[in-house]
Amino acid sequence: MTREQPGAPESATETETETATETATYVYAVCRRLDPAALSGLAGLAAGFPVRTLPLGPLTAVVQHVPADGFTEDAWQQRLSDRAELERCARAHHEVVTAAAACGPTVPLALATLYRGDERAQQALGADRDRFAAALARIEGHAEWGVKVSLPATVSEAPQSASPTTARNGGGPSGGAGRAYLERKRGLHQAREQHHDRALRTAEDIDAALSRLATATRRLRPHSPEMTGERHRLQVLNAAYLVRTVREKELLDAVELLRRRTGAEVEVSGPWAPYSFAGEV
Amino acid sequence: MTDVDYRPAAPPANGPSTANLADILERVLDKGIVIAGDIKIDLLDIELLTIRLRLFVASVDTARKAGIDWWETDPALSSKAARSELREENDRLRERLEALESADDGDASSSSSSRTKDKAGS
Image 1 (cartoon, one colour):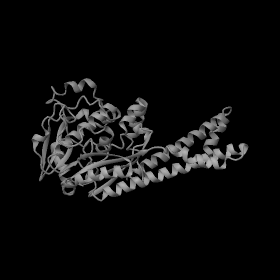
Image 2 (image 1 turned 60 degrees about the horizontal axis):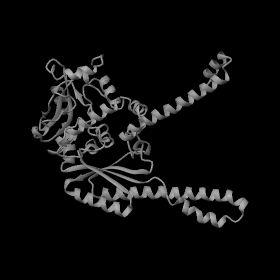
Image 3 (image 1 turned 45 degrees about the vertical axis):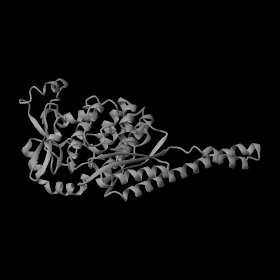
Image 4 (image 1 turned 45 degrees about the horizontal axis):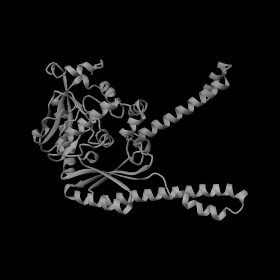
C-alpha cells in the first residue's frame, strides 16, 4: 500500500498511462451468467478501464481494473468523506451491479471489494463459490423492493380535542387558567401517544401485508426527520422485500390498496438488485 | 439529488435510475455479500462517524438531502449494533469524564496539585 496520497491531477492522466499504472481488481458482483455486452459503456469507478467479466468456474464475476494507488485505504478514507465522491462511487458501483442484475441473478458485493489482481480475485472468490451459489439460487427470479411508510409528524386535531375538556372545567376564572393549561397539556400528550401508537400499528400492518407477498423481509432503519429534512412527516417503516418477479404487480397493487386504506404515504422503490438479501447465506 | 451530471443520459436497463442517494447508500455501503479483499477496506473502520460529522459540518442541508444515517446502527435492526453501542457508551463516558475534569478545573483552578490528586483518586 502506498503511503502517498494520490493528488487530484493524477486522475486526469490515468487513462494515458494505463499500461504504466499498477492496477488492482475491483469486484462489483458475482453472477451466474452474464452477457459481456451488458457491461459495455459503463464507466465504473475508474475511467479508462473497462468493466468486464472474470470467469469464476461456473460463475462469473463483474470486475474492473483500477489504479492501485488511487484505491488504497487512505484514498478511500478521503473519497468516502467527500459527499460528492461518496455519491459518485455509490452510484457508479450501483450502476454496474444494476446492469449485471438485468441479465440474471446477481449477488452484489460490498463497495470497495478489491484484490491485488485478477488471479487473486479468482482464488479468493472461488473459495466462496458455495456461498455465492447458495445466494444466487436464493435470489434467482427475485428482486428487492424498498418500501418506506410515512405519516404526518404531529396531530393536527389535538388542540380541538383538548378544548371541550377545557370548556367543561373552566368554571372558576382564577383556578381555571392553570387547570385548563394542564388539561390541554394532558390532552396533547394523550393525542400524541395515540398518534404514535397508530403510526406504529400502521407500520406493522403494512409490513405484515407486504411480507405475505415476499420471500424474505428486512427492516432497515427509518430515516429520522433530521436526515430527511421533513419535519412535517415521520418515517415509521423502512423495509426491503425480496419479491418474486412474477409477484411484482401483486406487490404494487397491495401498496396502492394499503395507501388508500391507511392514508399513510407509502413510497416504493425498485426493482433493486437484491442487495439486502444477498448476504444472508 | 439532481446533480448527477456524470451519469450517462440513458438510464440503465433495469432498476431505479433516479433512486435517491439515501436508498443507494443504504444498499451499496452496507449490504451485499461482504468479502474481505486483499486491499483491506473496512467500511466500518473508515470512521463512518467522521463522514457523518464532516457532512454535517459541510452542510446540514446536504446531509439532509443525502439522508444517510444508516450507520447509526440500532440493536434491533443490525448486528453491528454492539459496536456502535460500545462506541456510544465510550462517547458518553468520555463526555462525563470531560465534565468531571472541567468541574475539577473550576474547583481547583487555584491549586493544580490538588486537582491531580483528585483525578488520581477518582
